[in-house]
Each structure stands twice: as structure tokens, then as C-alpha cells.
Length: 31
Image (cartoon, rainbow, N blue to C red; front, side, top):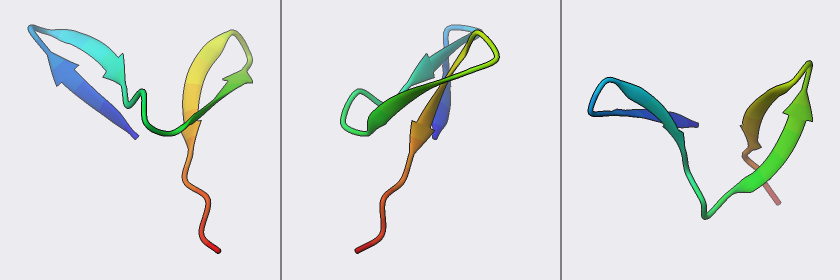
């Protein structure tokens, strides 16, 4: 889950960050 802050992508630091082809993606884990 990404947010646009001041025109830049910011990831949600509360979620697990995964590397995907050099991009930072957040994994939302549903248990």
C-alpha cells in the first residue's frame, strides 16, 4: 500500500516491505 506524499511515493512503514523488481512493495497479510 503506497501513499503519494508531496508528489512522491511513500510506503506504509507499518506493513511488511517486499522487494519486487527493485521496487518497494507492501505486503498486506490477512490472517
